[in-house]
Length: 262
Image (tube, rainbow, N blue to C red; front, side, top):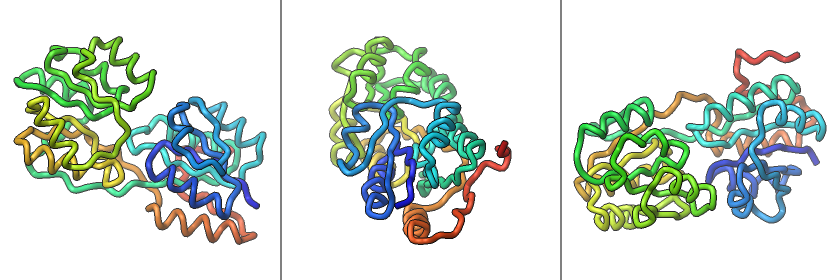
């Protein structure tokens, strides 16, 4: 059975791990112990953040046949590290690209969290941040009584909230994605005027946030999604199922053109 290394930082990544384990010997790499708990039991799991040299060493030492990148669309630094490590180790790289969602015409789209924070500083009313804890420090200029945040229910996330002085009553610690009804309930509960999100696609519950914001009269702020290339979930699954039964060389689909093999 061929060996596959999967970086599974998304909902689709967890689904892929389960599906691919039928045809591949799958090792899944996740950043946190919480992420590891969400993966199926039949998959070998590596926990902890890896830099590019560590990824390359892992690929070489364990002779993986292919590397699959199912990390979040906004995790560009991780994707660059995976592309470089795969190219250096001469291991084929395949990228799962999450389909983009249409943006409402009245959405306020910003390039970065810092720009969103600067623009929000010129507004009034409660702000609901659903962008994750990594972006939380960027909103430091905003008064803490204005900020409500939704984060994963992990010790690390709560520690970051504490460090950023977010009041406990302003923290929603839950695993998504979330329904429109739950989003609406939270927006109403906290009388939210501004909802800040990433364009995470259908798998990230983006449309449910859009609908909830519209229903509650909240302004939608969207951090612009980085451009990416890759395969859809169905395309990637079919490609890997075919390759698992083939003796042909796996193509280097999705490799960054700037990454050169040594």
